[in-house]
Every structure is written in structure tokens, then in C-alpha cells.
Amino acid sequence: MIQPPLLARTRRLTDEVDLVALAGDDGLLFSRGGAGFSGIGSALRIDVDRSSGAIDASAVQEALERITVENEVGGAGTGAVAIGALPFDRSAPGHLTVPAILVGRSENGECWITTVAPRDAQPDDAAVATFLARGIPTATGFGRDAASGAATDAPSSFSVHAALAPPVWCAAVAAATERIRSGELGKVVLARSIEVFADAVLRPGPILGHLRRTFPGSWLFNVEGFLGASPEMLVGRHGDQVRAHPMAGTAPRSGDAEADARLASALLASSNTLAEHRHTIDMVHDTLLPWCSYLDEEAEPSIVAMANVQHLATRLEGQLSAPAASVLELVSALHPTPAVGGMPRESALGLIAELEQLDRGRFAGPVGWVDTAGNGTWAVGIRSAELAGHTARLFAGVGVVADSDPETELAETRAKLQTMLGAIIRP
Image (cartoon, rainbow, N blue to C red; front, side, top):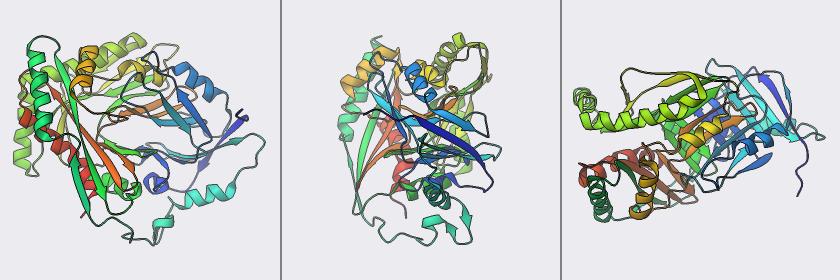
């Protein structure tokens, strides 16, 4: 079927909008701190070829450039924008979606709306008004959810099952440490999965609302059943500016301020954790540098505290050389970092395939957006779940090194799984 010529119309919005309320249960969402995107419908699906082990970024750009644009706002994220979540497997195909209606909000509070439809079609003003009503505050709340309160169709009972029994998973960690001590590789990230079964359909909207309240500094996303709250930016590109905020190294949080401070201090003082973190930062720096005229990084890692865990993180910022690489080129080169795969990359991926006994799907893959100019922001798809009706599949991974203790690593996965488990099984 031949796709008719498309037209993207971008105009300013004067009303304040809530992107999470806009997305609801059936929309696309990628936002942090109230900035980002919420969309609905699909004007165009762009298949992403990764058969070579890399994203064919030029094909995505060509598909976006075929969309005619009328843009009264300008800047990154306006005009034609595609949103997507790609599988962890670098060679697995994926796709991006150009929403039929997309609302954007910048960090300075500027809002806009883009509609994408066949060039000879009249704008569907009724559909736009209905969508906007979901996210514009009123005296009684937001749009269709204003009167719903605690939904009567919300699940009331749940069962939780591990995809792999904990002793079996711990044995895989022990096997990985032996391979690492033998010199085969330096680190591997092994993931676990649990399944949650509910007595009613699991709705993304309430889950995302809980995640926003509990993890306000995370990237919230919902892409066709894959949703979560990621603390980690993979890479962002706006104009010729590039940023990354990789994380590696984790400690639990107890809720007690003094105990959490001690745990953070121990994390910053651990030579093994700092070395693991350094490997990730060096990989991100060395990967981005060939595209940059300069690239700076923080002198020391900092602690990023979440509700349930805390991480070591280091910011990198730089300027891209002309012509600036598309954000998808940068995503393709960076994924997977040692923080979600291991090192060396190919050895770690081989050991994951051998020991993990898990199809990660989109877990730990890149999730984000790209526009016609190659701007975009992409997070790492961690602290995430796949929803399907009454079922949610949750994931968490840990970095295994030579001296890793399987029971300690198991406890870390349980702490990380609480991000999504607490949002799904709410009190």
C-alpha cells in the first residue's frame, strides 16, 4: 500500500498541558519533569532496519523528510517527530511511530501541537479538541479521568512469579563470575524477569501517574505497552549540542537519611564500583568524541538518588562537529553501554545469550524521539515493564564482576524491580 503524501502542521498552544494526563491509557509518552511529548494515533510507521547490528539512521531521516512541514514554532521537537522503543538486541528490527496528534512541551514551559495527516485532508479539529481535553486542567481534574477517581475496574488482587527461580538465576551469576575471573571478559549485565498477573486489565495511565509521583526525576515513557521510569539518559542531541548521563554502580536506599548517606559514601569510596563506573564513562566518552569538536565530563561522579536505589552517574556535554550527527547515529553507536550489556561488548552479549535464559525484548533498549533535523533525546529502557491485558512482565539487571556475590546481586534486582512493582500493585 502506497503511503499518501503527509503534512505536519505545528502551532503554539497557549494552554498549560499535562503530558501524563494527555497520554492516558492509549497514548504515546516520553517526558521528564513535565517536558517532552504526548501523542496519539499513528500517521506513519517507520520500520527501523538493524540487520547490520546498527540503526539505519539515514532511512529514518529520509522517511521523516518526506513529510511536508508547516511550522509556526520552530526548534527541536517541532514538525515531524517519531517516537519509539527499540529492542535490546542490536540486530532485532524495530519501528518508530509518527503520531497523528503530538503535543510537545519544552523545559521552559513552551507548548505546541503537531498534527500529521494526508496533505489533501482537512484538519480533524474535533479529534484535536478531544485529545487536548484529556490534559488541560479543569476545576474537577483532567479530561476523561476527572470524574473517575479510583477506577472501579482497577485490579484488586495480584500474583507474582519469577520467570527463572532465584536459585537458578544465582547459579547463572556464579557461572558468570567464574568466566570473568578466568579472563574471558571484564563484566556482564545479567537480567531477571518477573510476571505479575492481575484480576483486571492493567491500565498504563494510573501506573504512569504513580511513577511520576514517586520518581519525579526519571524519564517516563509509554510506547505501545512498554512503559517505565528510567533514571538514565543514553544521549540527547539538540542542534549541535550533545549530552549523555550514563550510570553504573548501585546501592540500595533504606528510607533512613543517615543510613542512606552511609550507603552513598560507601558507593563513592568503593574502588571496584568506581572502576566499573569509569569503564562505562570511558566507553560513552570515546564513542561520542569522534563526532564532537569538544566533549567535557564531570570531574567526579555524583549520586543520583531514587526512591528505592541510588546510582553513580557522570554527565557529559559537548558540541558536535558539522555536519552534526543524527541522534539515531549516536544511539546506534552507544547501545548497549557497559551499564546494560557489559565489557567487552561482544563477549558480554555472548555470555548474556548463554546464561540469562531471557528474551529481554525492549528492556534496556533505547527509548525516545527523533525529529526531521536529527534532534532527539533517548533514555535507556530500564525500570520498565511490558503490559498485555491482565499481565505485566517486569525486568531488572545487575552488573556482574569477578567478586560479585549472587545473593547480593539478587537483592539488588529485587530493589530495582520495586520501581514498577510498587506502581502496579498500589496500596
